[in-house]
Amino acid sequence: MHWLSQLDEMKTSALKEMVNVGISHVATAVGEMSNEKVSISVPLLSGFSSQSLPGTGNGFRVGAYFQVDGLADFSEALILFSQKDAEILMERFIQGDGSIPWDAASLSLADKLSVFHEVSTIMSHTFFSAVSLMFGLPASYALPVSNFEGEELEGFIARTLRQSEGIAIEVRFSGQQSQFSGSFLLMPEVKSIGKFFKAIGLE
Image (cartoon, rainbow, N blue to C red; front, side, top):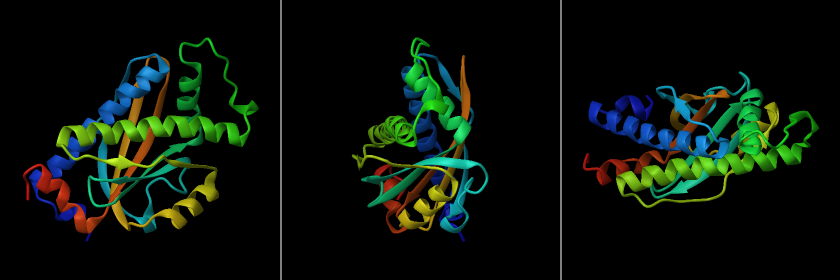
């Protein structure tokens, strides 16, 4: 049984609040870097195992992996996008107010990785900075490792993940000029997830 399904209502609500706070700050950061107001759908949470990662094999071809210390003894996370949605996000990041031309087809894979690395760094650091500040859990995080293209991404994930279970967060970002969806996969060390609940007075 997945550990998420074993949590009581208060702990589940606390996790949802953590997600809402983090994703809301990500939306603000995305809006700032793309010069538009960005709103989000209500994030959808579900449990998953590393043997059945949400989205992989179903159009998710671009991803970033990062590690976090502090919220639990050790946490992993993934950001996954379809190629199309990743390029929409990258275009908004590069183009900003529209004064800089963007042509994804003309960029090399190395160029795309560089841009996506910048974007995923902003998103991951924004999420965990907001969460750590709200709950008083100082966190340290490494720079994300980015990877593109289908089977390479799935192989990269299979080789890299240390945790076997986590929480999938599905969310859609909507701005005046663009819309895109993404998946955020959070994988805390299960034996130390109580550290988070203890910090907010639930254990």
